[in-house]
Image 1 (tube, rainbow, N blue to C red):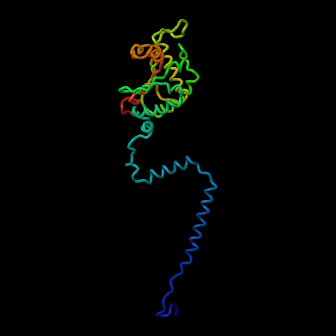
Image 2 (cartoon, rainbow, N blue to C red):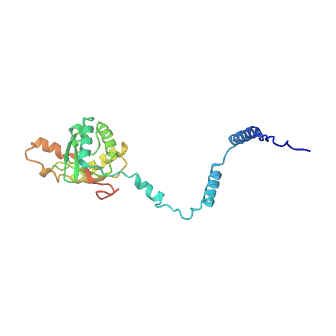
Image 3 (cartoon, rainbow, N blue to C red):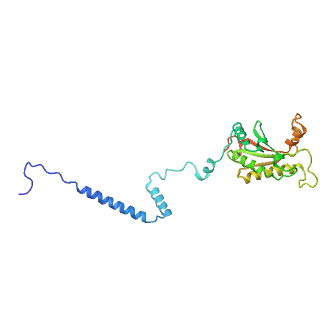
Length: 242
């Protein structure tokens, strides 16, 4: 007769084999990891496989659609917006002190704009539209501040009431004032400012609007200026436009 004796408790089965099985699985895993590390993965093929499996195995794939087109909206997420002009005035005033030329500029607030009047006699040679060598340093200080804002920017050139001298390459003060605004815009481009700049030439149109309390010498100096006009609207148009 075989079997256990009646009344004797049955011994539980040993689970020692699980230790050996776990060691075997660990060795197999380490082996496949080693094989993978020694091989080279084709990134494009792997990405294609993952995308294919994701589309096939995801039951919600046909119901999931992007709310917006990333390629169309992504550029707008990083568009700079217009900055409050009162805040910008404080930033400019702090930066003007770092340049001898900018420290002699005049910053004044209008209803819808902030105007920085750059002294033309320090930036340009008399009767010319070529920048002084020293004015380059002023633009290096000014450009980083302007790059942070998305406000619409204009450069308006001005001259005194005297016409260009004989032999001047400029036929009128309109040509001279516009050429100076263009030269200053190109100078900002050269030091890294890449946003749009509107350039205008006002000639001596603003000369007669100056206060008569100023001396003739002061009026003469201020008339030969280039105004950097920062509008409260953004470069894209509209007060809140991106």
